Image (cartoon, rainbow, N blue to C red; front, side, top):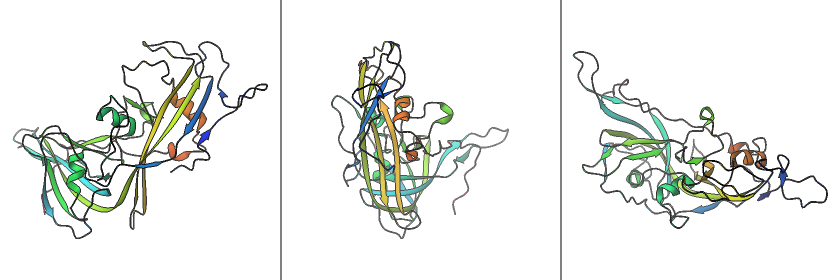
Length: 322
């Protein structure tokens, strides 16, 4: 977690006798974009409860034990480390080749078995909320983990007639990049917070619980302010003074060896609905943020690592069960 040197970072005008609250990126002329910028950060706050996740989707996820575990039982609010592979039926491509079960490469993921807080804004929905804060993965699957023991191996699939599908983040949280913007907008630079599908009508997963420890969900907000004239574009008219909220989420666990203290963070995230054309929406917020909180001083916010995850199955036949 980055060590915040102050809850408010302000840069100076450097002009004669003016109030020292903004930093000039360019001369304050029409069309100059963001001439002044300021950011005010809140402290991290623990949110959510140690209660089982609840899904509003119809139908259940079915788990079948493959091998028992002998470690501690997973409880609501735990941070759980799992390893999984996903499998599906593949069609033989060569003459005379029969259908076969294909398997993905193995993936390791951390999941929280607690319950998220209520929606943080009025007139919103769960999908929009996940783009503001990052998604924790399917509630049905996270709830299935509760009561299982460390070391247990099991298979999960959707029950007949169940609605939707099951997906989990591979790096603590998931976000739909095209809707919630991050600091990394160039495709080759994107940190990966994918939503990895593990169960559907055609897909199932083999899972092993590697470890579990007490976990917590944290959130933080910041108000980013901008000043400067911005040309109208794509139906968006910008005010000369703009301010909006950017957000972070993190999962924390104090686990035993070899994992120790675990901190999985997503953010900063900035989400604006495509139909939201408020004049106070931020313009090129990521550039403003990088100037106010540069990577040289806050490296943890830039050194985001992760994997997109491979969904390839049919070039990897599943090994027989032992």
